[in-house]
Each structure stands twice: as structure tokens, then as C-alpha cells.
Amino acid sequence: MRNDIAHDKHAIAKSFGDAATSYDSVAGLQQRVGNVLLGFVQESRQKEQAPRVLDLGCGTGYVASQLVNGSELMIALDIAEGMLCVAKTRVSQNEKAKKNIHYICADAEAIPLTENSVDLVVSNFAIQWCPDKQVLFQEIARVLVPGGRFVFSMPGADTLHELKASWQQADSTHTHVNQFCKMDELTADVQHSPLHIEVLQSQIEIMRYRKLQELTHELKALGAHNVTDGRARQLTGKSTLKRLVCAYDEYRDNDGMLPATWNVIYGVLVNQKIS
Ligand SMILES: C[S@@+](CC[C@H](N)C(=O)[O-])C[C@H]1O[C@@H](n2cnc3c(N)ncnc32)[C@H](O)[C@@H]1O
Image (cartoon, rainbow, N blue to C red; front, side, top):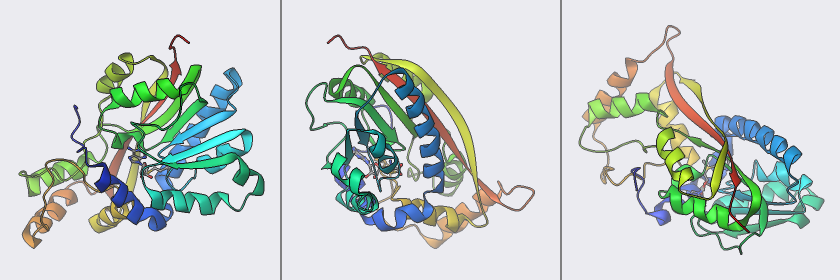
């Protein structure tokens, strides 16, 4: 395990379950990235038909609800039951979609589906929570038909670098921000699997805030809690928070706004396993 995300999947499921009802109100970036991802899915479907689709880490169902109409079978999988409940409500408004979609509460690293059972796997901003990408990619290759595609997005290593550096100045004894995957690590993990890289690219998105609390509130409402092994287990003191705010203030731009960088990775991988 090269990244620093703990194996505490219960904590991850709880954190996202608790955030299920607030998630959509702060998920503008995730939805924009989801729209780009849907463009990659459309391109993939022009090359290969994909009637059976699996959305890994479907969350509140933003991507799944748009893919279900063009699919014979849509499986929406998430580790957090609360997220699946919100996804069900979103899809329930569409009678046809309701019939084609199945929900599974499970871990993406142990997918409860048989071999070759889906033609396309999609995942928007979710696989960063899987600590062992090699296990994940093997699982995806197992459930995907030969020639099927895995289309995904995830935050990369530079994500929230301003927050990471500011926390480092305020409290260097703990890890306060999740560590995200470097491109070369991701490439190496793909190369250890039957998946072949068709597209792997990264893009920078900068969000801007008036106050640091707006960013931290947003991360909390998204359920994106710090789950690193080195996290502090007790509440942060006032003086540490003051040091954090001062350190982050150094990043204020000419318009007086605080930037927060998201390094978004997009990938399209083709399953080259021998049938
Ligand atoms: C940032 S949200 C993204 C949700 C959705 N894909 C979207 O586009 O808005 C991450 C989702 O991944 C789920 N998740 C995290 N770890 C998971 C795992 N190991 N297996 C399945 N789902 C997981 C979380 O419960 C959460 O719903």
C-alpha cells in the first residue's frame, strides 16, 4: 500500500453515509467532472456496445442516473448504504430507469458479481478511497468482459496541496489531508493488471473560497474526511487552527480569494484478459 489511506472501510462508509443528504449541495466539482467522464463513456460506446454497466462508488447516483437510460442493465454499487438510498430516490422519478437499475452495497475491492458480467465499468471520484489499486484493477478486470472498458476519474497527488502545506506548518505531527495517488504509481498499478491504458490524463481545477471554513465545511459535507493512518484522534486546538488559517492566508490571490487545487485524473482502460 503506497498511499496513506487507512484500511478502515467502516469509517469511510460511515463518513459518506452521514454525508449522503448534504453531498449534492456541495458536489459541483464532482458533477462537472462526471459530465466530462460521461463524454469519455460516450466515446467508448461508439467503439464497443456496452449494455451492462457497473458504477463503482455511485454515491448519490449523478452518473448512474444518466447512464441507466442507454443501458439494459445498470448496477449502482457503493460502500455506504445512505448514499444508495439517495441514489434510489433520484432514479425513482424515472419509471423505465427504475426497472433497469440494481443497487449493491459492497466494497469495490471485493465486487460481488461473477466473471464477465458487465461490459463497462465507470467510476467518478471514488476509487481514491480504495487503498490497494492492484486488487481493485484485478477485480474490475475479473467482472468486465474481455475488451470491456473501465472509465474513471479520481483526484491525483497535487489535490489540496495548499491545505496540506498549511496543515504541515500548523501541525507537522499529524496527517490532516488524505494523500492521493501519483500518476506514475497509478500507471504501475494498471500495468500489474490485465487492463491496458487507452487514455490517462490529468487536469487542474482551482476552486476559490473567501474563507478557509468554506472549504473545510465543503469537505465535511462531501463526506471526504481525513482517513489517513496518521490523523489526529483528538479535536484540534484553537492555536493550531489559528496557525492553519494564517498559513493558508499566504495563498490569497489578487482578488482576495483562497485557491484550492484539485488535480483531476481521467482514465479509460481496456480489459485485455484472455477469455
Ligand atoms: C466522492 S463520492 C463520489 C460519488 C459519485 N460517484 C459522484 O460522482 O458524485 C465517493 C463515493 O465512493 C464511495 N466509496 C468509497 N470507498 C468505497 C469502496 N471501497 N467501495 C465502494 N464505494 C466506495 C463512497 O461511499 C462515496 O459514495
